[in-house]
Image (cartoon, rainbow, N blue to C red; front, side):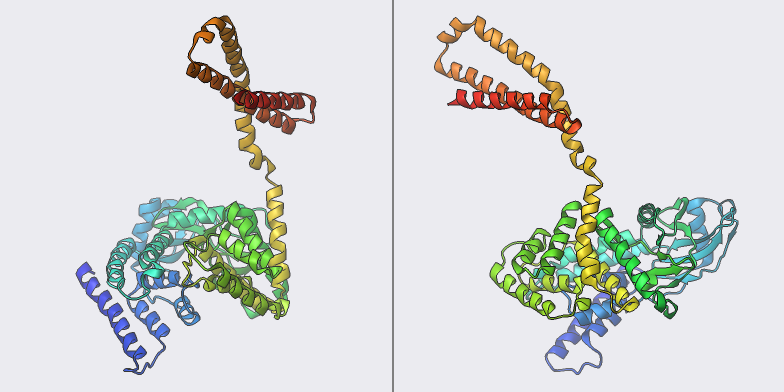
Length: 516
């Protein structure tokens, strides 16, 4: 479709929806459908890019009402499979002639979506696989639509409150995530990472990418035969499956720092051997150590019903920017905490609590980093699935209480990594100590030989000479401190490190005394 035609179609649809909404709000028109539902229908009519952007927008629970969240999460694009001959060309462009790669390849796809369609195939060794092929022209269409959408958004910046949500930044974020989703190379690398993470698990399975067969356009993956986790046949196993899912996500959140961001039942299958199989790694979240620690702090503070602590943890997560009223925020947090204090423990929800705290900051420079948006989505979907599997599951005990223990185990397993840089830098500095001592000895000998000359120097010269000695002494003291600490970590010997620390302290005292 030409960009001019596409530009007219998108603007007519979006401006038409805004005009309709204004008439409804003014009471001049009776709405036959709810505004949220009508927006979803408009986005669906505009095709792939807008459906995916709407789904991405549904991550922003902190700025959208529940009715909009529900409608945007339900967005589905209805597309027909593209020509099988074109799919074959795309696969051969990626991997070479089909006959050299597969023993058999089914021309007709068994599933089709707006971004890709999926074909069944068999490898030469008999393995059954799925071949995911990207829809031709999808990248160009996305880039074109995003450019048009940015033009449209610029026309809305004059509206009251429009700039508060930073709409252009929001569109840029959604566009970046959409580009990741249509890049099969990124999805395949995510998949391989999770395959490695759960390689030792007897309860979680991840279908592996076949022999590095992936490009931007196509990807080959193991076929996994399983049944959706919400199938009624698994009701008797509900408690076991809920426990496995919670443990898997605690491991992802607090040990691995990477997590599957879309755990709805369509991406969770139960295999014949009872393992839960994770599918679709287009949406993945990452948590660094600082965020993990702050997240556990938030959980502990909320469980302890300490509003001041919750607020501090909220700030440490980077959720607020600029000026805000701390007192009003704390009062609102007290109200949320008291609401939860009256609930049975089985009804506690980390996802809901986190969202309510985030929404407290609306109008006060709320800022939800993308990794926390993905986290919140993952937690909501995970908790929803768990409650369906086991309505009596105690999330406070299973999630809140276990989070700190899992993170502590992860930190305890990597002491070498925590001290690696200190040891390396200390070793380098310790190797420089002999040279520094030699240089100081040379300077002192030179100063002794030229005592008469120094006496004749102006005062400023003598001060510079004194400053040079202090710098040398301070450098050597620092080297001795670090070298001694390094020696203490390397062995149980204490005499040599103690002597080094004593010498360093003496040099520190001399340099300070000399300055006085």
